[in-house]
Every structure is written in structure tokens, then in C-alpha cells.
Amino acid sequence: MVAAAALMIAVDVLARKLFSVSIGASSEVSGYVLAIGTSWALTLALLDRAHVRIDSLYTVLPVRLCALLDMVALASFMVFAAFTTWQGGKVLLNSIQVDAHSLTPLGTLLAIPQTLWVAGFVLFSAVLLLLFVRAAMLLARGRWEDVQRLLGPRTAQQELAEALHEHERYKA
Image 1 (cartoon, rainbow, N blue to C red):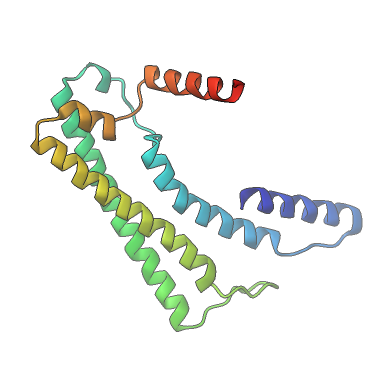
Image 2 (image 1 turned 60 degrees about the vertical axis):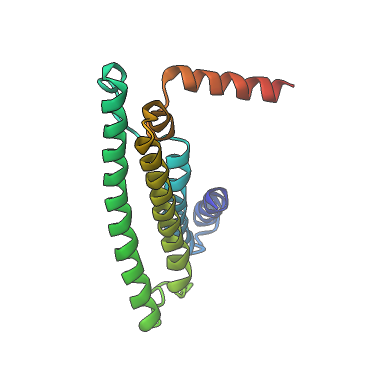
């Protein structure tokens, strides 16, 4: 989606520069792509443990405290996701009720991109809930290190091992 939007923007810029004509849709479409891509990418970043966290203290704290902090961080993310999903759902329902269309030459039925946008947040919320339940089950069994591996930020060693694994995979 991002590559297609970038291509559309490039064609639009060239058409304006060379022929003084604009496609007129590149800005609108790229906005939809950014919103939809972001809502879906949140889940991928969550599963890759790639969300930005400041871990300078994390690496020296006891495992149990880190696991509890990971749970607090996940719960905070759940509050954010629930709020965002709820508000996005309200926007979508309002667009459906009033049959909202964009005020652009495309006249896009807003429910279409908004459905894809909200679906990304619904997926993010569902994955957060599943991770929370899994981590709570691990905590109940006293498996602190497993909670840390499931929720904590990737260590430099883990990132290096993954990079080396990818390098070997592509080399072969």
C-alpha cells in the first residue's frame, strides 16, 4: 500500500511539474494508506517486541520486577488500544450513519478506509488481550523469565542473533 501511494505521489508530482496537471487524489489516498498501515503495523510491532521503550534500567533490574513492569506496560497499551478502538469505532459508525464521503474529487465513501483502519485497531486490541492472558498464566506459574521473553524488549544479543540468522538464511 505504501509503495503504491508513493508511486501515485511521484506520478502526481511529475504530472504537475511537466504538464501542470494534478491527479488530485494522491494526498487523500496517501492519508488513508498511512492511517490503515499504522493501525495494522501496531500489531506487528507488538509481536516483534519493537515498540520503543527506554530500557536502560530494565537490563539491571531483577527479573521479577521486569516481568511486573512488562505487565504494567502491556496493561497501559491495552488502555490506549481500547480507547483508540472505541473512538475509531464511533467515527466509523457516524460515517456509516450519515453516508459520509470525502470532499475531494474522489468522493471516497469514508466507511471503506475507516473500516480497514478500525479493523487494525481491533486486531491490535485482541492480540494485546491474548498476550495479557498468556503472560498472566505464566506469572501464575512463577515463570518470570518467560514473561520477560514474551513481553520485554528484545536485548541487543537477541537482535544480533536474529540478524545473523536472517543473514545466514539469505546467504543460503
